[in-house]
Image (cartoon, rainbow, N blue to C red; front, side, top):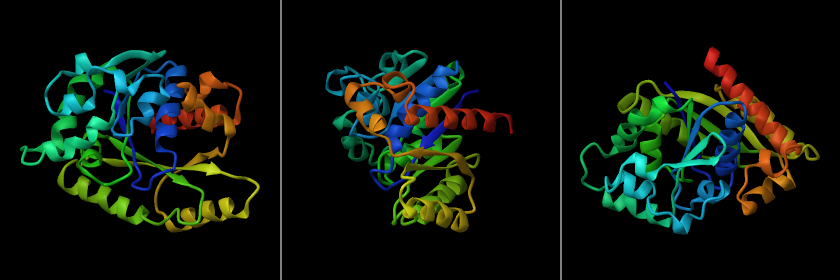
Length: 255
């Protein structure tokens, strides 16, 4: 049974898509079979994995509305060992289309249950809000990974996210666990980054990954070339960091 990890934080710009893309690619590099699901209408994970989001026939939107099946939506081997369920701006209409649909929180779960045996990992890139798409992801997931940017307002909104995770666990998905928090955009030259890490550790009774993702120019450039960092610049500090994160994620499997 594959692990289903939702990469979630309702704050934008914290490195969710970067983490979803590069964690997927680095898990695949280690021989794991991965499905990335782009849950964000911005489609950053789709384009970051080299797919033209405006020219895909079927996306998550059609899949959620039942207009197509998973087998017709999944793009195979967009990167070696990584399959993708793509998204584009159409997905922003899903919220309205699903009003009144019975058990709408469980739509994605029903889809992933049919395909999760084909994968070691399903990585879902959630939108930067706690909307129906995020709720669907949390209901389908086995765990939640929360990227936190090393900046002053890092903890803001985090308690709200944890409250939402607790609500989903109580009402929709009793098996959901907190995979952990991963720090992103860490700048070793500033005291602030260090303070944020210490502050979160002091205030958060959650698993915190040892791996910290640095601010890295190559990491920022990679999506514009449609490549994960381990392909775009395999020897960069960004690539090394995501490989270490993949190692940590795999090691949690054994616990």
